[in-house]
Amino acid sequence: MKQMGNGDRLSASRAGQAGLFFGIAAAVVVLDQITKAILRTSLDKGDEWPEGWPIKLVHVTNSGAAFGVLEGQTLFLIVTSLIAIGTIAFYYLYPPADHLMVKVALGLLLGGAIGNLIGRVSEGEVIDFVKFPNFPAWNVADASISIGVAMLFAFSLLSERQQAREHREEASSEG
Image (cartoon, rainbow, N blue to C red; front, top):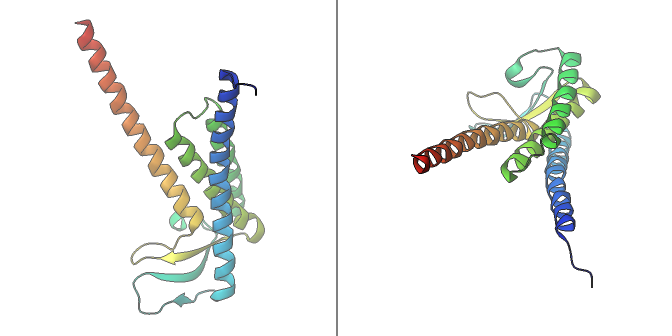
């Protein structure tokens, strides 16, 4: 039996990491599209369920971006979504995203961007369906984007702290 060399292990590791990134993105897109399809068949546009509860399933559409910004700017939002998808892919590849947290976050962002892009291209709007009091309705793609951004922000803060700690340790060992 042939032993795996370092190059083979590295290739297998990269393939697994790419699988994680694309797998998360695909899972988000599938879950987003399935939940929207279920909602379309379960609630009429404008309806909500259950009535009288603070957290509801609603059937609303949004031709704008988050929180209703850029309402009716579908073409602009399609173009910016495509740019975002390209930017996420570029950031994943150059420099390669080495940290697991970054790969997961980018997968969430990619899946969310694709999920909402599908609605914008096919229907000219996005379906939102989870409603909390005093907060706009959202969907799986929106949640994935929000979680991905929060993860990147947290990673950035943790990385800065780690770099500062290493710099202090380096300075104290020199002096």
